Every structure is written in structure tokens, then in C-alpha cells.
Amino acid sequence: MKRFIKYSILFAAIIAVLLGCCELMVRNSPNTYTMKKNWMISHSGGIKTLITGNSHSYYGIKPNAIGDSVFNIANVSQGHEYDYFLLTKFEPQLTNLKNLIVIVDESNIFDPPFEDAKEWFRAIYYKIYYGYDKHSDFSIYNYEISNYSTFPIKFEKAKNYFCGDSIASDCDYLGWGCVFNAPKHFNVTEMKIDAKTTLERHRCKNWENVGYNVQYLNKIGDWCKHHNVNIIIITTPMWDEFVNMISDRQLSTMYDVINQFVRKYNATYKDYLRDPRFQGRDFHDVDHLSDLGAEKFSRILKQDIPEL
Image 1 (cartoon, rainbow, N blue to C red):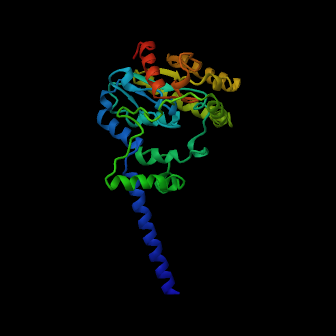
Image 2 (cartoon, rainbow, N blue to C red):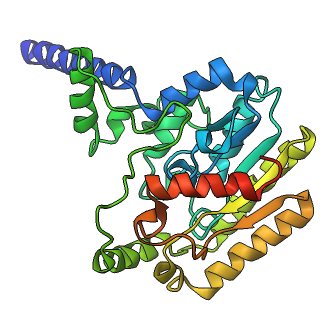
Image 3 (cartoon, rainbow, N blue to C red):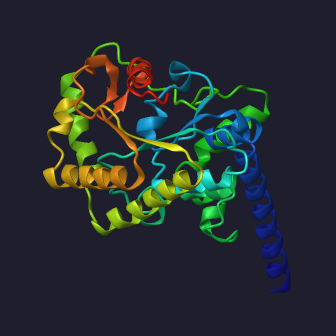
């Protein structure tokens, strides 16, 4: 019996060491979070315009098409809570910040906290790579391996990276998500199928989430007011047939939140949700711009917003 216990402990220790090595390999291989953190540490003192938000700004707003001293710190599903956290984290370095671009749309005002969502694992990235202390070091939010559905893929990439292979970045050097290439042919049938699944994913399932998101949106507003930073609220373009499917209640709530925020903080608001200039290959899917659409959209922002 003692021998069994001894070998069981030894086996468990070996497994723990192996898993720990795998965790460290994944953590130390390149990803968009480490790239953006390292860029901000080195260059944020020169930023005049900072782009925050979710995938709609991550893929849709291209800094080098707007001008100099612009950086995109947005990421997939990044809500206002994490926008605010990043502002406060890099506050000491953002000495020349003049403009903050904030995305408010038919999804992020209604999104639940990561911990209550299917994408709970995204909280891991802000804990590990940005040091967000919302969760304990001993919680599932402090380990890449906690998300076992994607960990094997990440480990394979990390293994190849440490064996000398290059890893293609999902974003360019200024933080823009550069992998949503325009389709060769615009397929209306596929877009209609995507519209139905996206509509369900974005549908508000708990209206109390509006208060949670507005709370952090107001924190962003207070931060900008305190630091004399212009706030530019943007709703990005989406495929017109998809927009027509969004519930009236959800859209009217979105506009109510925006209008109240604009009045309270004297913010600039630009609404491109139904902009007819964006059609066909400008879209990667029903609610994200392609690389072609992002280039066009970013140049339009530069023309439309005097602060930029």
C-alpha cells in the first residue's frame, strides 16, 4: 500500500510538472495581448488617439489609415469593463492622449460579464497578460490550460514557435486585426445564414447587463473628463439586412444609452450602423468589416472627425 501511494504521488508530480511546462510554453509564445501590452509599455507616451472596444473596432479601425500617434488596443469581445481597466493600467504612460475612441453597439451594451458568458475564458487573458487582479492567482482565470477546448491548439503553436517556426500575428504592429480578408465573392445566402446565428448570439438575454456595461462606460467618461481627453463614440457599419433583423427594443436602448452619455460627457457620436457606403466585399461577415472595409472606414473616420 505504501508503495502504491508513493508511486501515485510520483506520477501526479510528473504530470503536474509536464502540465506546468506546457502552460509556460503557451504563456510565453506570441499573442495579441502580449503584443499590445509590450507596445503600450514602450510607446504609449506618444499616443494621441487610442482605439478601444470589441472585435468591431479590432477588425474595423486601422490606425495607420487614420494618422500618426494612433493605436488600437481593442480585442475580441472586449467590453467596457476591460476598456476601463486598460485605461487605468496605462494611465501613467498616456501623457499625450487627446482622443479616445469607444465602440458602443448592439452587442457590447448587452453583453454579460465574461464570468457569466460562454466566452468566460477571455477573462484569463486579462489576468495573465495584463495583470488584472479581479481574480485570485489560484482561480481558473489564471491558467491557460483551464480552457481545455483551445489549449491543445495553442500548445501546438507554442511548440512550433519554440522549435523555430514563426507564428503569423493576428494583428499588425499598431493593433489592428488584419486577418479578416475580403471574400473573393460576396455570398448573400451565406450572409443570411450568418445573420441568424449572429442575431441569436447578440440577443440580450438579461437586461440587467445594460446597467453593468453603462457603469463602466460612465467610468470611462469620468476618466476622460478628469484627463481632458475627447471621447468619440462610434457604432461601426454592419450589413443592412442584419441590422433590419435586430430588435427595436435593443436598438432603441443602445441609442438611449449613447444619447445620455453624449449629453453627460459632451462626447462626439458617429453612427455608421446603416451606412450605405458599405456593401458586399466591405464585409467579412454580417457585423465585421473586411480588410477592404476597414481601410475605407478608417479613412472616412479621419475625414468625418475633426479631432482626428
